[in-house]
Amino acid sequence: MTDEFDVIVIGGGPAGENAAAYAIAGSNRTAAIVEHELVGGECSYWACMPSKALLRPGQVLEAADALPGIPAGPLDVDAILKRRDSFTHNHDDSSQVDWATSAGITVIKGHGVIDGERAVTVDGTRKLRARQAVVLATGTTATVPKTPGLREALPWTSRDATNLHEVPSRVAVIGGGVVATECATWLSSFGAHVTLLVRGDALLKSAEPFAGTMVAEALGARGVDVRLSTAVNSVSRPDAKDTGEGHIHGGPVSIETSSGVIEVDEVIVAAGRGPTSADLGLSVIGLEDGKYVTTDDHLCAQGEWLYAVGDINGRSPLTHMGKYQARVCGDVIAARAESRGLRGPRYTASADNGQVPQVVFTSPEIAWVGRTEKKARDDGYDVEVVEIELAVAGSSLLRDDYSGRAKLVIDKATDVILGATFAGPEVSELVHAATIAVVGAVPLETLWHAVPSYPTVSEVWLRLLEARR
Ligand SMILES: Cc1cc2nc3c(=O)[nH]c(=O)nc-3n(C[C@H](O)[C@H](O)[C@H](O)COP(=O)(O)OP(=O)(O)OC[C@H]3O[C@@H](n4cnc5c(N)ncnc54)[C@H](O)[C@@H]3O)c2cc1C
Ligand SMILES: NC(=O)c1ccc[n+]([C@@H]2O[C@H](COP(=O)([O-])OP(=O)(O)OC[C@H]3O[C@@H](n4cnc5c(N)ncnc54)[C@H](O)[C@@H]3O)[C@@H](O)[C@H]2O)c1
Image (cartoon, rainbow, N blue to C red; front, side, top):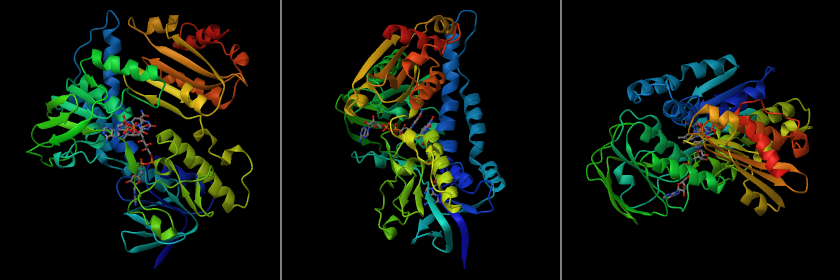
């Protein structure tokens, strides 16, 4: 027997959930989500939520340390891990399943595979058919390089690091991107001695260069051994044991690097992610197994029946961007179901093209939107840049040691902002104003009339405009 739905979504992470909900909202159409692990996906249980729960206490402690009159003690790691578990619901997804059900979505637990146009098989036996659309939302998985001995050492991935149950005393983190720098930040705040093994010559290479420099300096100041331009040649762990997620996976690990041999109690691989599509039936419909599923700006991957949202399409691997794409995709599916046509900007995921915001929750935080100066120039823009210290009345009140940096990348032809970067304590909330300016293409002349409140960190906007006048 084949069950029929209007829309079938494979993968119940943040992108899949939103695509399903938007595709059927306010209609009597039906949707199913096929999920082989937990509804809520990587973000809820192993990525954004637990990592930010682990980072916040360290940020608060640093702020308290930088203000007189606030007694600041060491972190209570057990209490922090308990709070982290409350955010991940101890890996119980029943509230997310209830939400999906209340939105009219049928949750089918099992592994979904495409086996023809509009056809999905779950766990090799249950046949589903989509009357209208199949949406792929299977996300990405941590990649572990083929460095000799590394896989055999059973290293931690981000799943272990975000769900840690014990803090390794000495830990090496391989990578210099977002996961590596955030991990190094929370582990060092918990008292671990962290060595960051970075293949490239800088951290956070997709941000403005000053961001990576500031994070490297700050990590160094808190005792992290940041080794740039360092290759990991081989790894050896004679006593590797699968002790479970977030537990130390056996005895000491010896790592031979281009800057010498180090011994640690655990090694974390934070060397990027790859598409979860090796076992998704892509080759059955003429796509390549194990690759990203490319789409047009309506998130359509094939005909008008196959869509891909979130990390799996390789556009902008961030939860907020996956959810944005899912809203666009769901609206496209709904409009096509109702023969409404795709008129208007709502049906095009334009923000993926040069207007993506991102926050790295390190200390200092790094927040940016749009193009860096290099990216803007590479894309052919004639740009002017403004770069200033982030020292305004509001920031000096926030904490005594406040220091930071801000940069605007301005398109000379149109006088609008192509990109903005902020680096400093608690700058994450500054970036949305910049996002509105970038997406709205607000001319700088108009921004003079967007007056920041006194005394707030947002006064940096005034300083940036003054620096450019
Ligand atoms: C440590 C870490 C921290 C992060 N922090 C942030 C952050 O602070 N902010 C941010 O914006 N982004 C963050 N990200 C990125 C964010 O987690 C991803 O962009 C987001 O989870 C992508 O959502 P998704 O729905 O596309 O995929 P996922 O969340 O990966 O969900 C995919 C779902 O599909 C399921 N699935 C896969 N294949 C199948 C199949 N064949 N059948 C059935 N089910 C299947 C999986 O079980 C999973 O539930 C972080 C990532 C990491 C690793
Ligand atoms: N706060 C956030 O928004 C947040 C937090 C964490 C992750 N994420 C997202 O999750 C995704 C994955 O993050 P990530 O840090 O794993 O990937 P990344 O691509 O940001 O960084 C990967 C790092 O690993 C290094 N690397 C790659 N292969 C290597 C190898 N063989 N040996 C040594 N080093 C190697 C790269 O040079 C780079 O420094 C990113 O898209 C990121 O934006 C977002």
